[in-house]
Image 1 (cartoon, helix red, strand yellow):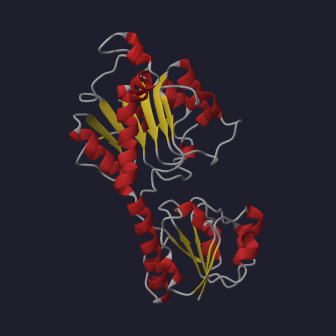
Image 2 (cartoon, helix red, strand yellow):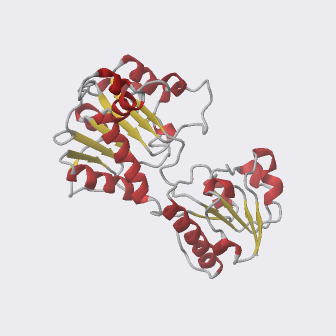
Length: 315
């Protein structure tokens, strides 16, 4: 079995790929630029990837390709319709990073609500030592207990965040497609109107793209805290940036962007010096434990596929 790993560098140098390498003849690439994708897929039976985009153009001549394994739960970087039409199976890895994405989502919200970075900077800059005062209470911060936390997306990650938010004393509104009995159910428009904290945990698809629009931002409470660990394109990023700059959005935490990495022309470039903004480099999914789980489960996906079993199949 010929297996090509297109971007092993995105999984981290500390992760052992032996569970996959033990399954066949493996060619490993730390990274693959767009112009080399087709060439590297030419003889492969299995493609393993994380961030590389696969489409009709670079898949057209991959005549031996039977299986694509994405090192993620989301698979919006793969042309699923082309794969389905051409008999190429696609498997993802659901649930491997639930705990750590929820962990970062909540950590961002708590840090932003508490103005933690500003208080830390006051001490680390030496200003506290020079102040002559035993304490500083500005900027004013508020207890998160009693706030209304809107969770958009009720899958594994969203459900975990809702559980933690409730444990912190928040009133939780949950927006999900399935009927909800554990928390108060609400649609996206109600969440935008009523919530003090809004965290996003939905896949990117035609129904979620741009769901946090300029109009919905305008309906939000002044000073709302928004956390996005889903996909960058579920938000109108220009509208988000404008709302942060105007003060409509009180704080923003974001780990995902419509273009990764984003360039100087991205709307968030204007937010880099803002103390009420926490931007991280798409790392929420990547705890050591989660990355090891991901590799093991991709190996299981390959084994199960060639044994004729349906396992984590998207198509």
